[in-house]
Image 1 (cartoon, rainbow over the protein chains, first blue to last red):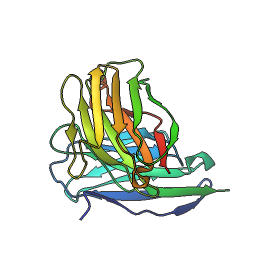
Image 2 (tube, one colour; image 1 turned 90 degrees about the horizontal axis):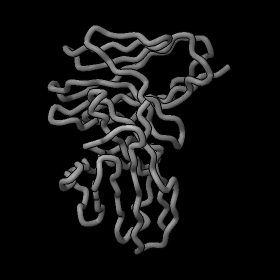
Image 3 (tube, rainbow over the protein chains, first blue to last red; image 1 turned 90 degrees about the vertical axis):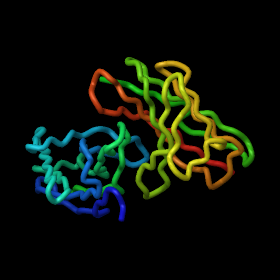
Length: 110
Length: 116
């Protein structure tokens, strides 16, 4: 079983719609969680950290469910520029090493 | 914000040659840098952790003698792919941790390596 698993997608989303997807992690001792965004042939860029109580940043909302070991990302009012691969990232229990999921591809269409 | 640069951005080389990739933190000091590799349609895989002034820590399955890492200063880490072969062709990305900003890692723009 992979440490961090994501639905690869693609999620085809009409512009203006809402899309949500999850990520599961296997290490119950994981401490920090992040969503990164990666555009084609570019480096990952931090979208947002995920806090235990859930957090929102503009149109993006992240949730953490420790009991079920998953995190989620919801994008409201999707823009064409939201088209990207969203990487679920979890820190390992030991040290500051990050483990990346395979990414969920989102395609926002007009 | 924290800026990390990589050089070169892309390189094409012949099989058997060595390639050096530089990773620099431009506006902060990074005691720890990380090297990742990403093959097409796959996720980033951590290769090694580079610690300033000490030996790098390699992930399981990564050959330390093939991927030489040097972290000689708080702003520079280098990865040398020795005797590169076509299967080493990949997207190499470094990241640096800014101790003043918690656990966040900032990524360089990556280096595309193509070995012919």
